[in-house]
Length: 62
Image (cartoon, rainbow, N blue to C red; front, side):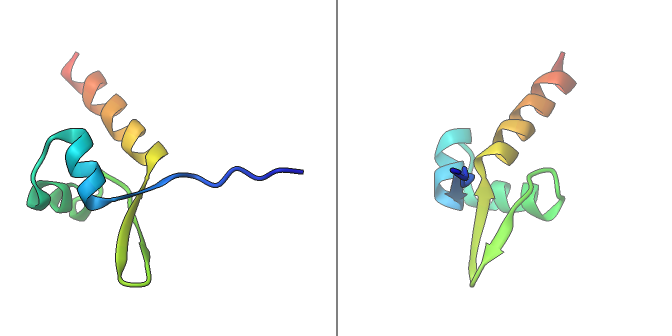
């Protein structure tokens, strides 16, 4: 049996993918528009959460 581990992105990786600044990404996390987890002292964003965020934004813009 194989298990699929979700890809966890760092804040700088999310910044690069969304082409947004650090404070904007943290604002999205703080407002819970972008789901994240804490691993130790590091913040990580599941790749699925980023895709969900993008899809929600596209739907709202339509």
